[in-house]
Image 1: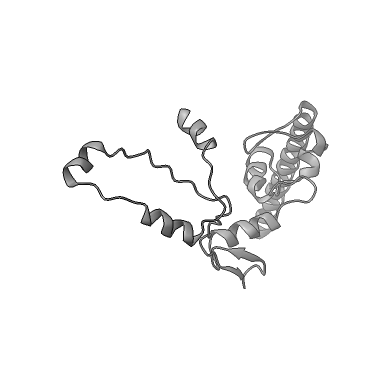
Image 2: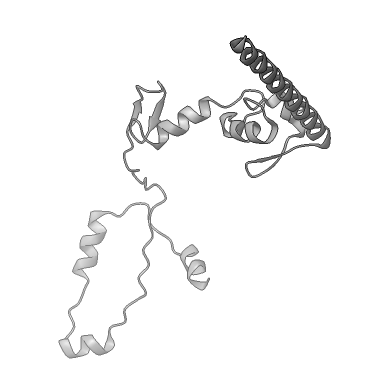
Length: 174
């Protein structure tokens, strides 16, 4: 901390004249070799960088991707392209990528695709835990009802197929 405080008190001249440097060189006196080692004091060296130094960034090539048509860094067909295309597919209503939730909707609720209007009726009240959507109680109840209705429809269709198969088998033997 003392080092930082000492840096604040160091004054750096804005410009140095060449004449001052020449005068300083003329005033330097030579020391004998034995005396030089014993009596010369070396001040702590402090490097002060000017505030106007600009750091050059690594050159990153920004190109228009032929796959997605957007401009992004990192080359064509790279991670940047993948992320740009992924961001472009986000839902305007909820901000989620529906394809991330299609598989879960199919297995848990027997739905073809994730429907944000059904799962998230009020986007303002959307709660998430990481990538997991926390559903309110009324949405869970509604999804259970839809699942039950689809199960009944599937059972009816299966029963109708069995009865039609039974009639077709009887028709073959008469």
